Structures are given as C-alpha cells and as structure tokens.
Image (cartoon, rainbow, N blue to C red):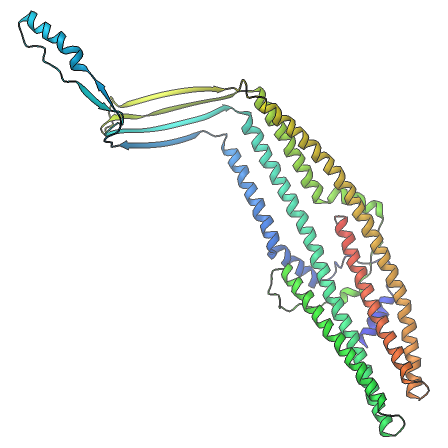
Length: 452
C-alpha cells in the first residue's frame, strides 16, 4: 500500500539532503502568494510607504517656500475712535479769519473712525528660505533611518510569514497522511469483518466476532472524522495566511514528506542569525534614530536658526493695483533660545537614556536570538530521535501484524490478538508520520531562528 511504501522510503532517509522543504514547487507557490497577498504584510508595506513620504517631506523643508495671498475686507460697526479735529483747530481758524478779515479757514467737524478697515485689500507674494537650521538636517536623517527600520521590520515579517506558511502546509500534509493510515486500517478491518462473517456462516465462530469488528470500524470512522476536521482547520489557516477563501482547495505535495534533513552546526547557525536576522537591523536603525535625535537636541541648544524672506504686493483702500498701493519688504531673521528653564538639557538627557536603553535592548535581543537557535537545534535533535525510535517501532509492529494476521486466518490466533496487533501497527504508523512531519517543522523553525 502507498502509506506503507511511504514509511519504507522514510526509513531509508539519511541525515543529509534537501532541507526546509525547499524543493516543493507547490509550497513555493503558496509562499509567493503569501508574500504578495497577506494582509498583515500589506500593512507593513503601507507603513514603509508612509515613512518614505515622511522623508520626502523632510527634504522639502530645505527648499524655499513661496506663498500667494489675497484678501479683501468689507466691514461695518465695531470699535471706533473719536478724533476731535474741530475742537482743536476751529479756535485757531476763527482767530485767523478775524485777523485776516477773511473766511479762508472753514470750521471743521469732529471725526469718528472705526477700527475695522472697510473696502481694504492686501495682495502679496511671500518668499521664505532657511539659511541655517540644524533641526532640518537631523530631521531628514531621522526620517531616513525610520525608513531603514520599517524596511527591516517588513523583511522580518516576510521571514516569519515564510515559516508560518511552511508550518501550516506541513500540518495539512500531516493530517492527510494520518487520514490515509486510518483508511488503510479501515480496509483491514473491513476485510476482517468479511472473514469473520464467513467464520460465522460456517459455524466456526459466534456472532460476537462480527460485532467486535463493527466496533473497531466505528472507532476508525471516528478517527477519520476528527482528521477531516484537522485538515479543514489547517487548510483554512493556510488560506488565511495567503489571503484566499478559507475553503479553497489546497494542493497536496506528499513528496514533501519524503525529504531529508540537513546536518547543521550550531555555531554557524548562531553567527548566521546575528548577521541576517532583520530584527537586529530594525533595532540598529532605531538606535541610530535615537543618536540622531540626541545630535538634534544638542545642536538646537547651541546653534541659532537663520532665515531670509521677502514680500511684494499691493495694500490699500479700494481694490486697486497702482503705484500708491505697491510695496516691497525684505527680512533677515535669527532665532536663538537664551533661557528655557532647562527644558533642552532635560531633552538631551532623556535622549541619552533612550540611546543607552536601545543599546541594552540590542544586547538582550542578540542573546535571545542565540537562545532561540539553541532551543530550535535541541528541538530538532529531539524530534529526529523521536522519529528514529518510532521508525524502529514501526518495523517491529509491521512484522508482528504480519505474523498475527497469518495465524488468525489459519485459526491459530484469537481475535483479541489480531485486534491488538492491528491497533499497534496503526498507532506505529501514525506515530512515525507525525514524528517525521514534526522533524520537518522543527527544521523549518530552526532555519527561521537562524535567519535562513
């Protein structure tokens, strides 16, 4: 049978060969689909794109800004000011008229003007350019390092996603192979039932042997149903990871379970992990961001900001554009904070603490990664040992079942002996298939921990 053939092939595997299930075109296709369609990865991509736009914004601050503004105001009411022109000048004008015997100086009325300008417009073009501003330089560097951090975070998630898809696919194949074993067991039990019925018809055995076979068949049907449920769950999870309909069919590449496992050196894996794990790259970029923020705060405390600007336009009552309303101005500005209550010094100290925290965190993560590789290596070795033991048990169970099966058909063994041998061989087959799938999963986990 095909399942038994699978175990015989597994028994011939060595400790070297193609690892991490890299030779399966089906699995590779699902991984590509996941890297293209996974919704969480899309969010990572959008975060990266947003950071890149922040870099463009930071660079734009180095260029001059040009603004065009036009306002026209109509107003009535509001606060007013009294101007006593008549009270001040009329006595003088009256005296002059008497002295000169003339009416050349007319009497004036007191005036009242409102504060809000009425029928007033201002139309101008404004230009501003930062000659020196240390904040702009360091802000651009910070945004660029944030892009590096986001890129590394996205790459780390891609690596994690490859492992998750691989694990989900192996779990699906594991459930399929287990189902095949139970179908094989069911066929054996059906054959047993037919044989027992013939014994009953020939008055060699009583009816209880048929009932016993039916009971064992019901147990096999229950196991098959439970495995179907496991298959559906594994298929749904895989489809979730690659953003497909949860009930979509999954192509089974059972040859994946025939692959061998590479031989690994723990020291090489740790070195590779410390070089290639993107989590470290993200932390390194975060530390650079904090160090740049420290430079920004120190420069802001010591250096002034210098800018130039200008404005040309028209301003006056009535919407007119003539020489009387035209104006132009130029500005040179310098800003320097003399005293701020120690706020900037506190910010500098706060940033230094953050830099030291990130350095400590990097050291901790390096040790965690080394620990992950060590644990994954030990788990793989444990899984390989468990599979090796189960393989030996399978060979023994297959031989026992073959002997008992022949003896039972020759009426030299009891039914309970036959069922015991049948349950043993089924259990041994399941244990071997589960153990080998676990070896492949643990290898995938090891390669993930090592950044491979």
